[in-house]
Length: 285
Image (cartoon, rainbow, N blue to C red; front, side, top):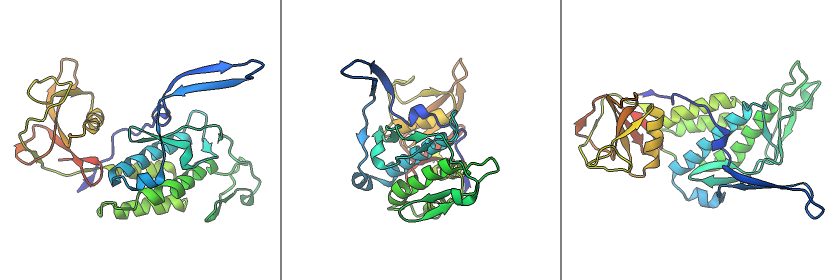
C-alpha cells in the first residue's frame, strides 16, 4: 500500500471563517464607531456533542482546523496568532470548523534579547522558544496556535474510536503537536497522507446510482476539472462511496466521472477513487 497526498494544499481563509454577507458602520452620538457584520449562520461548538458524533465527522473538523492553522501561519499579513483561542470562538458550518472571533488576533511576534524572553506558559506545561538573531521569538505565533489546537481539540476529538490502522499515525501527529516537534507545514502534509491512500487494481459494481445534476438521465455522469474537484463532489453526496474517472472528456477538456455507491464487479476504464469508510477520505485503485 502506498500513500497518496492530495495534489493541492492551498488553504483559503474564506473557507475557514463564516462568509461575510454584509456590514453596517454607525457613528452617531448614540452609537459611536460601531461596526455590525452579517455572516453565514453556524452552529455553536459543543465539545460534548462532538464527542458523540462519528470519528469521520470529528476528523473532518480537525482537518479544517489544520487548514486554518496553516493559513494563519502563512497569511499575507505574516504569522497570525489567536490570543483567545478556545472552542467558543468557533462554529460548525456544513461539518467544517470556522473561526468567528478575530478581535484578539495578533501579527506581532514577541521581541526578545535571549531565549528566556520567549517563555510560553500554559495550564499543563510551559515552553521556551529560541530567540532569533532578529530579536524575535521564533515561530511563537504559530506554536501558540498549535498547542491550543492540541489541548482544546486534537486530544479530545482524534483518539476516541479512531480506525486501528490510523492510530499509530494519529498518535504521532498528536504527540508531535503537543511537544512542538513539527511545524504546521509538516503536520498539514501528514494529515493529507492520513486522508488518502493508494491501492492498486480495483473493481466496482454495475448499479443505477443517480444524482442531480447529471449529464445522463439513467445514471450519474458529471464533468470535473481534476481529481480534487471530483473528491469534493463525491463528498457532497451522502450516497457517493466512490467515483470512476473515465478517459473521456468534454469539448472543453473537462474529465467525465461516474459517482457510484460501491461494489466489486465492473472493471474501470481509468481508475476508481474509493471513499475509505475508515478514514473519511479516498483511496485510488
